[in-house]
Amino acid sequence: MDIRKCYEELGGSYEEVSARLPSLKLIERFIGKFLEDKSYYVLCEQMKCGNRKEAFFAAHTLKGVSANLGFTALERSSSKLTEELRGEGEGITAVACELMIGVERDYSATVRAIRNYLNL
Image (tube, rainbow, N blue to C red; front, side, top):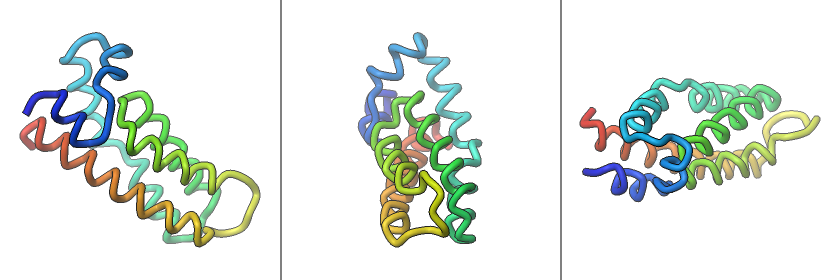
């Protein structure tokens, strides 16, 4: 699999990330580091615990990392969740739980494509 196919599979934009990170080695390094990022796991835990504020911070971090790496699908789903969690409300809303399903789907697709590309 080449890097363009990887980005196609994860619903991303290779053109976008290659404009920011000018070498394939640098892109590979950062997408490999993405697999070590804990923000998704923190998000899952905080959603389960009903901790809206911490879930917001984790979703916001995931959105930012996804944006920087050109993971368009994951960026969009985590952005929607971030906006739903933004504010002073209490607990996790039903809408946030529904949006989390999209984040889980996009995160899984992203990780699967990266692992396939990096032969992990």
